[in-house]
Image (cartoon, rainbow, N blue to C red):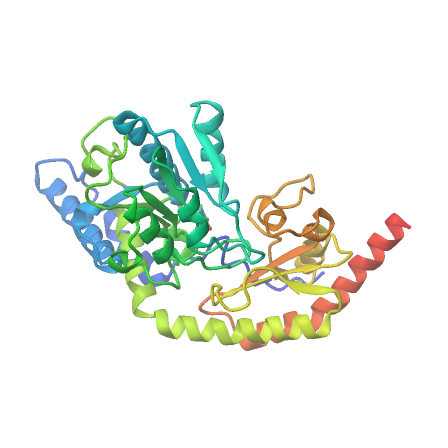
Length: 392
Ligand SMILES: *Cc1c(COP(=O)(O)O)cnc(C)c1O
């Protein structure tokens, strides 16, 4: 057992709060603790902070301030987008059809399943290619007059693949069908310019880009109608009632501002390290495949499947060797079920169980990558040996 602090290679699961972000948040816990809805000066100070945070987010998304809805996380943004748009479209025009990709995060896919099972919506899966991408022409051929909302993930959390969001959104815009994208994973590295992305709805969550956990936002284009899923006060245009989490909103805004300012540097740095890692793993370990698109993918994201390997066993061995990685989505399931996302790419359940996700961060180092690539071949061989014995 390696007792030094493990190397963290799971930045798609979450990131540490940047110290500059924490510094921006701190005053709003104690000195400036007011409720943004109060009339007095405490309230005014808090309201000004919320307004500033909204303005900064709007700048980052190239949109208007009133198009930003603050939420409690990426999951809530996805829920509000999908459920809110589906319900509004049903009330407004009797629409009953929902289109999503089969590689959505559970925040979208399980929400869609509930809309089908409990609310009677017809949910249809768009086809994806073997990299997990949705083809705009295939989307066009499946749009219907009664389509309530379409949702396609921007950058996939498990396989890193980036979808052609602007092209997909353009197809929906032509038919005036609201288009949502889950940009939670994309936000740290890809453009969030809503003027060029053409989306109606876009979800982000702060803890994926060095902001705090428990805060997110939904971009809602002017003219896109949602039914509020949390009712009460008039906060967030009535779309999300409840006193705003002032320090966290301030933190999210600062984190996104920093992510965009430092984007070119962060992008190149992680891309070079990631390419080195992928190169060594594919070259030095036989029976290994990259999952997701080789180029159209997040710059910090590497994901593999290994023949004859149990992913969970490999993760435990990596943990023992001092590396914190993931096998796909962050959910720790005791029962080894192959990931829906990997199955949707056409992988066999057997191969899908042998997955590994390695995601780098802005402060990852070449030395960490080399050490990882040094130990992985032996660990994979060990797991293969174990599995061979168990089955043989
Ligand atoms: C992490 C993640 C979410 C969920 O965001 P939370 O803020 O953790 O609720 C949704 N979608 C994608 C693609 C993610 O990576």
